[in-house]
Image 1 (tube, rainbow, N blue to C red):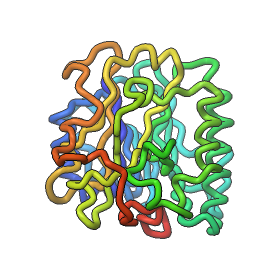
Image 2 (image 1 turned 60 degrees about the horizontal axis):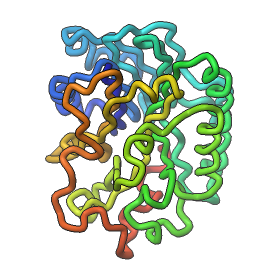
Image 3 (image 1 turned 90 degrees about the horizontal axis):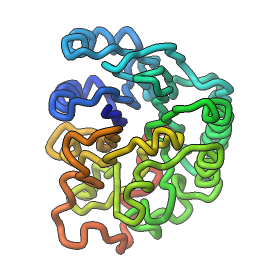
Length: 297
């Protein structure tokens, strides 16, 4: 079973890119984030195309800057919209949706950005992650569980192109990383790092300053899973091809192949960066700063 996650950065703007990618990559389950559509608008835009490709759809959005979805042709049962215990900003936002797909409890997550460390949104982010930990703590012992999406956290310094460029910024602070670590403590495994512990892997490249061709990126889109899922992983990779060209999202899909790998164990980033030294984290540009998105993210 192929399970993927992709921050699409506006499903309406990426409609053609999304359908093309579904036809090319053929995921059994796809978690989407930042759809920026209401439930009705998402179904109106995609329902026919997805139905013809065998996908059932669960979407949770209000038409603004958030919005999450699960597309599945491996079953879509017990759909749950929203994160239990969501602290709200000030009201709960459409940042989480869950369903059981192919026997796995799958969560599509769009973790709050945090904006800056002195912004109330940063406090909200940490509280939201604490609520997510409680959800995982309750679910993980029964397994299998996967939490996939845009976590807006680079787990380690190796997950950003230049840690000096993030001095004083969100996405790399110790409280954020500790909150992510708390998910590992209650039973989740970072599938990318389990498969590629020392490779340079990014999932997000800012649109500005030629960040993508220079490979000035971040790994903030994660696939976390309980051990019973992790043992089934045969390939874990980032589809960089989906970030190429015009009209793309600034994120690339993260793909997990369970039980068999139809394209082989081809990771970690496909195709790999072409520039010499593309994995380097030297330099002083702030193009990758954690203040990369608008205030609503």
